[in-house]
Length: 115
Image (cartoon, rainbow, N blue to C red; front, side, top):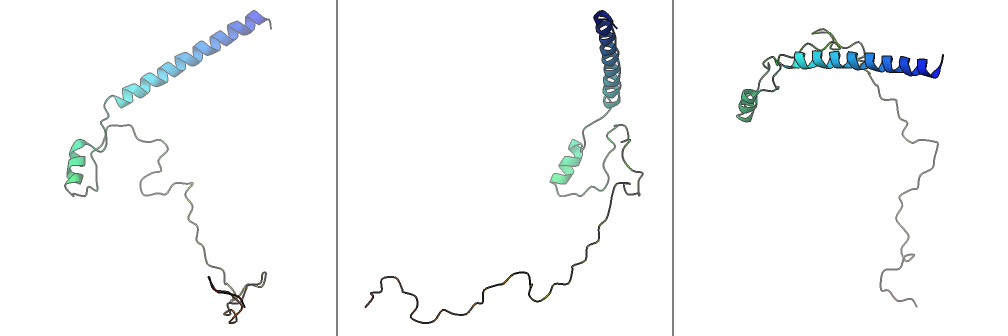
């Protein structure tokens, strides 16, 4: 394959990719042309007044192709149950200090004079 063939093949591939990208973008713009923001201004106003809305107005967007069917968990959802392991009263892999009061007279207090 010569250099001119490579250049021509690259130009064709880039033109095909550009056409496919423009087509996809046009489809997306068309799908979103009828959509409205969620929540709507009316829903915002009701929420500001303290109302709780369980259901929202449909926004007109296409359904999410990656969403699981209603009432079914996502196939990637996992629930992990953990149980605490029994802990011994004191761990044997390290030593701890005991909390005994210091003997009297061993520590100087601030400002004390030594004899």
